[in-house]
Length: 325
Image (cartoon, rainbow, N blue to C red; front, side, top):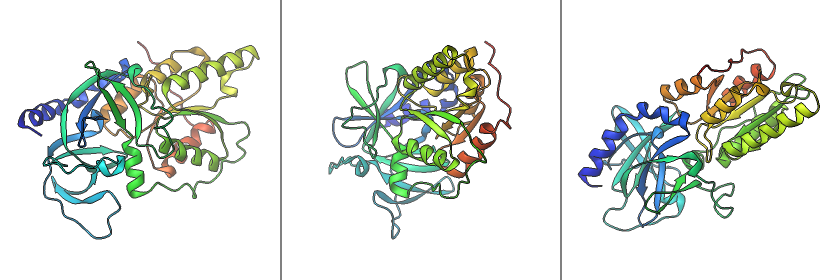
């Protein structure tokens, strides 16, 4: 990574909180990086704390596959993962894994080894598409694809899946079922297969029926269909749908815009919107609140997910009103 790129990346990353406003306009910024060849990868800037040259890594015994060791960074010891080993990209060049992207999401801090970073690109979420079926399996590492203005394709990695593969997933076995869940129903949306599996597991333990969507646009289409059906049958939608759970980052429509659509449509009155996200910045929560989001849950904490959903499903929690313009 050259000095110009390092300086540019750090300068841009320092102002990340200011960019939270992009979420409400269905836009995002991704840090572009390489793992050894011409293929370009990306990660949401909101997950990046800093970019630096790879420091000395201390290797410890019994580390999971793909975890190179640990480093001491600003008083904390964090694990370092070789991203290339998770996506099947191997490289023996002189620049191999010379750059470290320090990230924070899902309540954890870790470093990702890459060959180089290029720049930060601003894109519209509606230009971010789900991967083809060949890339979208249960253990896929690519969560979305987008095209840059110069025509290059960017693979946006499912870094939550990387952590799950390296360190395992949270358990749902201790989630107690709701008392008399009846006809409680949820619609949830998340582009990560790993996250969808966890959410499904928690809801099944709670005894709640659900529908799922892989992106915000699909979720909104399904919600409108549910609303139309309820209207045709002369019943309130809130009698059919108790809650909407949405990821913040999704192809085609992000969770913020989805929440705004829901909260500004009278057919969804009284239905809480919960954001299930790996982003932990206070600015992220602040933006969600302006869109009317009722609660936030950090991903891959099954106990907290169940504890947050329980009072909302049983009608024991306050639902935010429609936000004012």
